[in-house]
Image (cartoon, rainbow, N blue to C red; front, side, top):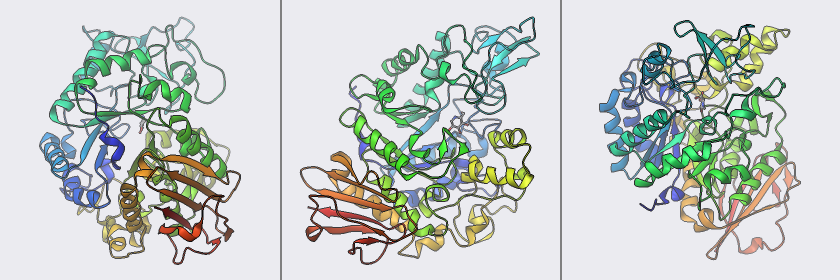
Length: 550
Ligand code: NOJ
C-alpha cells in the first residue's frame, strides 16, 4: 500500500498521561481525563495525539519500562477507556499515535523473567554476558540513567545490558524472534486502528558485534558504539516491509545525537525506513549535548540548528518540529524570559510553528507553563534526576545542587497540567495527586487564558490556524536572514501563491529591525503579532511578527 502523507498537514499534541488530567479522581492522570479534553485539544487546531506510554508498567521510568505491550495500564483506564479515546479521536478527524519502546522492556516483563531463568525461547531475548574472572564488567559503557550499563542478575548468574535504568533491560534485536515480537506489537495496535508510532531511542536497537569498549570521555560512554549500530537500517526496513507498508500509518524516530545527513539515511522519502525524526539539536541551544550540561542560551546556535534541518531535509524528507517534550525543561524558562513570559512564549511559538514540518506541541506548552522549583530534592520522581542529584556536584552546597536540578530536570516539564486555579490546578478531585503542580498555577492556567483574548493559549490557536491556511508554510521554500543577529530570528517562507516573513525577537531590549532586501513592507499584511501596532522599525522585547504578501 502506498503510504499517505496526511501527517504533513497536521499539528500534533503530545500527552504525557500521568500529569495530563485525572478523570476518575484517584490522583493519577488517565484516559478518562483525556476523553474530557479531546475537544480542548481539537480547539487548539491540533489534529493528532502522541501518547507517551500507557501500557502496563511498574513505572520505574514513568511508563518507558513496559511490562506488557499489548494492553493498557488499568491505572489509565485499561483497554476500554483506550478504545473510547481512539474512537473519540477518529470521530473528530484526529489521529492517534502510540509510543513504541522496543530498545528495552521492564525487568518485570514476562520475557525477562523467563530469560533470566533460561526458559526457551526467551534465553536470548536480552543481552547477557558472563562475569569476567577479574571482576570487571563486560565493557565500559555507561547507562543513560543509573551508572554503569551492566547489572548482575543473581537468578541467571550473568550481567545484562541496560542503556537506561536498571529496571530497563535492553532487548537483543539481533535475535529474529525478538524482531517478530516487535512486528506482532506493531500489527496489534495498527489492526486496532492506531495511526502510527513514535519510536523510542530507535537508533539504539542494533548493538555492534562483540560489544566493544567505547572512548574514555566521562559522557555518553558507549553511545558512539550503539547509536546507529550496524544492522539498524536492515531491522527498520524489515519492520517497514513486513508491517508498516501494509497500513496507512506513519512513524517518528527518536534519535539522540543525529545530524541531518545521518537522519536522511532513516527518513529520506525515497529509500528511508521511517517518516520523521525527533532530533535534539533544536532544544540544545542552551546546553552541551544534554540539559545536565547547561550553557547560556545561544540564539545563533538555535537558528543554525533550525536552518540546517530546514535546508538539508528540503525536498528529501519531512521535519518534525518541536520545542518541548517530557524529556526537557520548559522552553520559556530556557530560551525565553520568565519576566517577559507572555511575549517570549509567543515568540517561541512563532519561531517554530512557521517552519516546514509537522509541529508537535507538548501538554502545557500552549499556556506557557514554566519550570518547577521544588524546595526539596526528595520531591523529584524522575529516575534520571534522582540519580544525577545523588551523584554529581557533590562538593557544592545543597542549594546550588538543587538549583542545577531546577534548570535541568525532566520533572520540570512533568508537573500537573494547570487547568484552573482550584486546588491541584484542577488536575484532579483527589486530595493528593501522584505529583506536584507548579505553585504558579493560580496565575498560569487554561481557564484564565480561555477568557483572555491576548493569552498565550489563544495565540497558539491563531498561529496554528494561520499556519494551516497558508500553503507556503507547509510546502514553500525556507530562507533565513540576518543570521548573525544575536537578537533576532528572521526567516521567510514562499511558494507561488504567497510569501511570509517571520520576525522573532529573543531580546529583552528594543531592537532595530530592517526588512531584508526585496521585502516591501507597504504591501504586507501583519498576519500575526504579539504586540499592538506592529508597524515600527523597532521590535519591542520578545516581539514577533508574521508578515504576509499574497
Ligand atoms: C526516551 C524517552 O523519551 C524517555 O522519556 C525515556 O526515559 C528514554 N527514552 C528511555 O526509554
